[in-house]
Image 1: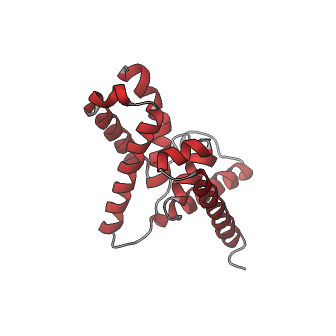
Image 2: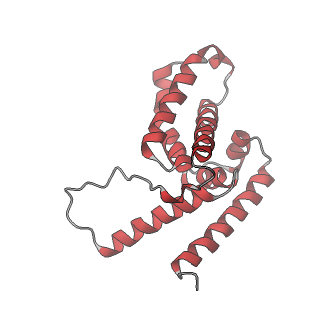
Length: 173
């Protein structure tokens, strides 16, 4: 296995996973860097690895959850609802956006924040399935669950998201 050919190409997916968990771009970048470092330090294990992507995602997920848990203790249990996802595609030099585009972007930010407030493993499952496009089998392998558990958690997560999103959009009415 080669670091450049087999591990580095997964950086973007690892970043999206870390960003989805932490909801903070700089933190996600640090987590990806730490994931790459851990992968390099564990290069003696490379011959035994059958699915490099799943292995890297597991490392990244664990690091992100550790950081999130540590950050929650620092703020005495407050949630991450006050954080925002920094969108690198937004450029201050761009012309004003159309109101429909702004609404769509704000809806996406709200959904990402709501996903971040879901309990584990629901938050991870919905990210892996609906954002990253992993199969139920791949998710089950990564999270060490059965495929049926993945389906149940995903259903519950989607229900909770739908309920919270509609409640916010209708101003609690």
